[in-house]
Image (spheres, rainbow over the protein chains, first blue to last red):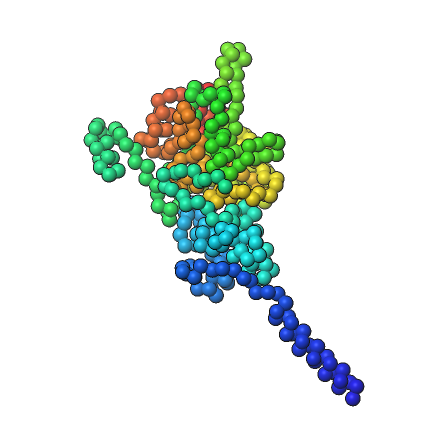
Length: 130
Length: 229
């Protein structure tokens, strides 16, 4: 008799724990500019953006191939928030929010500038000082 | 309009072009080994009091003026004096973009590399910060970043723990422009161009006046040449 009540109590605890785990970590909140589309469908880009960027960086640094649809500059340009103009630096910043949720360290921006850069002219005017 | 001007320039005399049309290669093509970028620095036109090239480099690449020996420095003015004759000179010294770079030879990871067009760069994704290249460079051109950075320029990624040096403003070259130092020099002492192009200004000048490479005895074949030393 007593065992059954203990068993029921344990099961009840399990259910309540499971229910709270789903809400324990808040899902990332960020604004996405829906007027344009990303270079790949959402599920694909979520899985592969690290590989695209990694492959791309060798092309850019070693071979000097710039721009194109998977250049980091293009990603930041599109994804930098309207308010901060950056993809890291606040909990609702695009890159930072998902990476904090997934628990994956984001070290691109130790070297790369997370803010949107000024538009470059082919005439070679220097970018405005930040 | 540019095409017309170029055609007109070509008509003046065979082989003499009035207008040098700088064609930026499309960004989707990589750097080509047909080109070898280099600099010609004329010591006669360089003034000891002027450091416009250094300031332009700092502004373009997001560097701050070095105050400590551990601060990064991509270009510096070197003052020379011949003790016997008393002749004083001043020239800027930066990464010499050697054809046989010692920094590339010693790099354990392959981060220090020479691009197809002759520019010697550090791939900071691969750099582990061992500073072997800093030791190996005969021109002391390389610096190490000791502190975290937040004010990098968007075109010039730099970070703590990696080695860096003059990139010949590769981000500007790739869009058809030249390095900031050459553009900023008030006396045009720094000439930038393609050493492989027989018609470029730099090749013509190097053919006409005597120029030297710094420490030519080391046989690293720098891409930077100095006139008037």
